[in-house]
Length: 396
Image (cartoon, rainbow, N blue to C red):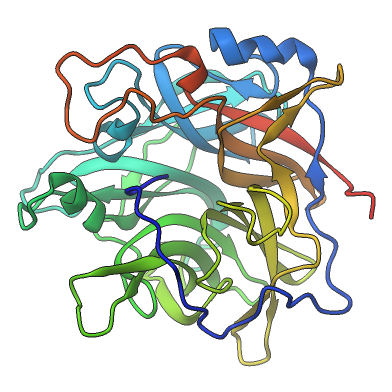
């Protein structure tokens, strides 16, 4: 998700190089397969069909499915009204995390209920007074009770009128929180405090959480923040992707000193999973610098070292999907946005589907960071939706 449009040249922080593929690297998640041509109509009318989850009245963004004990797939995703005065930029202020269900991973999904939303400034001064965004749902075992619960990680913010630009006030106050429930229908209990605060190489704000449990019982979060600028603590440096560890799914998550990949790689939206004792993460590869092939979704992996740290490596062929949807009638649709990746694992722990936020044309077209009392209509091609793409072997 765009915080603002400025891009930075980023120094490499010495963790690994872009050519750091190693021998005996693990099997990757696969590559994007084809979608049923009958679902292509959803890109225009925004009616939900298999593999495309859309709503003509809402911006959709991100989505993480969880298989429930009822045999249904429960999708938690970000949504906010299409006609709001900021358009796409309303994501920072008025998003709610909604809940949809389907009988199959690809859907079709149907809205079920709202999960969590901004509580407002009650009590006064709370950190999460504004917004609820970046839904990331996962089932984890509470180490204190042994009970499996649904954990819903999110970001929120507040305004404090300390900067001239109110947009940047809210961006800079973003933190990561968590809510939990015994059922995907709730009720949800929110942690009163952020579960992760800026620290280590990630300064100013933290967003885009993805969480999993490591084989040794610790909980791993991958996330995004900003680099510090030496000599100017108020200035924001480039975007960086790091990782944090906690003893409990409710945190606190402590940010570690190394990064997922060099800071010179422009990326966003990490998700994370564990397979065969290794850690994997998929990210939005802004300009294709990670994959060296094309902008889209790429992956990296991590080896758990004897001391408990994670050493991250860029594989030889990181690309999962370029910014294109391929249909089973041979046609292709180039898309402007393919972001917020989430890799679904099947019952055997193998990657089966890639979920992502998608828009055919620029999703920010006609939108404004400041409220417009008469916002222009949002074109259907600019209204984002969620897509579920089957993963197939890459053939290498």
